[in-house]
Every structure is written in C-alpha cells, then in structure tokens.
Image 1 (cartoon, rainbow, N blue to C red):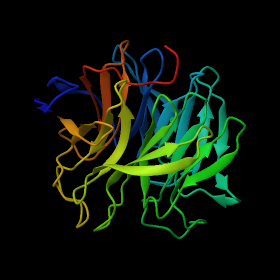
Image 2: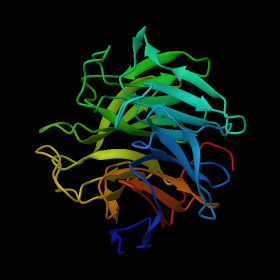
Image 3: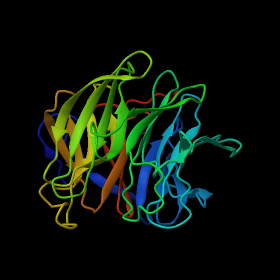
Image 4: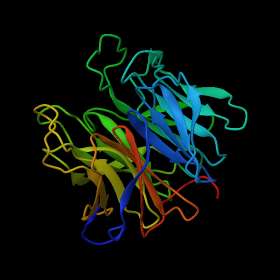
Length: 311
C-alpha cells in the first residue's frame, strides 16, 4: 500500500495488518516493545508482543479506551462507557508486574466523570486526560462540562480546559518540555469543531494560552494522536464510509502528520473504518501502530516517536 507522501516521516513504507480483533482503541507500547491496546466491544485490554504473539491482559476492563505508560512503566487507562455496558467512568493505573489496579480519578467535585477517553503523561509524572461523552444516552451525566483534566503527582484533580475552549475533547499529547498540550476537538455534529488545538501551559500545568493548529472540518476530524521527537503530530482521522450528516468522507482515513505550525506534511493511508489511535513502538521507536476498526496496523516511519517512559 502506498503512502500519500508529501514530505517527511514514513517515506511511503507499507502499512500492514498486525492483528485482527474487534473494535480497537488506545495502543501503548511498553519499554520492551509489547503493545497494549483496548478492545472496546470485547471489554478487554489485549497485548501484542514483538514476535507477534497476541494475548489478553485484562478481561472486564471497564470499557477501556486510551492507554499510556508512565515513567515507572505502569499502564494508565481511561475507562469510559462507549460500546456496551459495564463502563466504569474512571482513570486507573495498573502495576504490570502485580496486576494491582489503582483508581486515580472517577469524580470531579463529587460528580462522576462523563467517559474518560484518552490520556497522556508529562515528564513530571502529571497526567492529562479528556472526558467527553459520545454515547447518545446522556441520561446519567452528572456534569455539564466535557473537559480536559490534570492529575498531579499528589493525586489532586484539576479541570484545566472546558467549554467554550473545546466542544468535545478527544485525543491529546504533550511536548517533551511539558509546555504545550495538544488537544483534538472532535464534535461529530453538523458544524461541530474538528480543530486540533495547542494549549500553552505554565510550569504548574495550567493553561495560559491557546492557538489553532489544524482544522479537519467539515470532514471527520481527529481521534487519537502521538508526537515524534521532531515535534510533529500524528493524528488519526478521516473516513472511508460516510457516518451520518456530520461525518463525511471529505478526509480520507489515515494518520495525518502535521507540523507544530499546522502544515500537513504527509498522510499515511489506513484502509479501514474507523481509525482511532496510534502509538510508537519497536526498539528504535520507529514502528507506528495504528488501531482502526477491528484491526491493529503497523508501518515504519523515519522519525522516532516520543515516549516519556525509560528505555
């Protein structure tokens, strides 16, 4: 398969299916190269080793969505309510060696979170996560804000972004200097925001400014994203088949490689609906894993991905 190569990262490397499961999200590679990813409809977290062995890390995973490894090699997971019952609406951290699960956040100011979606971690160990609600059933919502939150190392939970700065925050990623938080606004409604935003942060992780980076409107916008060591954004976006009036096929599915200034330098095509998220893995961090529909894809890129966990 040919990459729609403009300039930059993949050099037209082939995209191949790494495994086939159900409806996949939230890939994250550990320091050894094993990729953990969420099977939303199967309500489990799966693993794929470097030699291609597929495994199940956790059943009854609380409708796990986004995942990330912290500096200590622990798996941080957003558990939402999409694609079935038994969603737990919380952010957890799992010790891989023992399997012990710690709840980091499930309420804000006494009210249950909406449906934690994606998570990233900075060099200080602070976590940032998005909390939209995409499930059409909103009868159990306890908050009227779909926001972005920070969990400090002492466990303090702070909402740092809400409406009107974002409509439905989805994927996010933070720069190596901890000073820019990229957030994908992904509102599927007609006329909804499809903007990738850059939020400038102060030393404490509070927002001090924002600027637009890339607008996917009116086609389907971004879902998850990652950064490479050069600072480029890898945004999973687009559709093969129209999904209602608000999600058109104007943007073909793939990983859109975008500079911090908002220049599209490449689209890596992914022949699947719906492309959801990505991560960098491999010993050189140059293997890009992409979750899309019921498939986990991989391709080689020229620029290594950025990770906070130690090698």
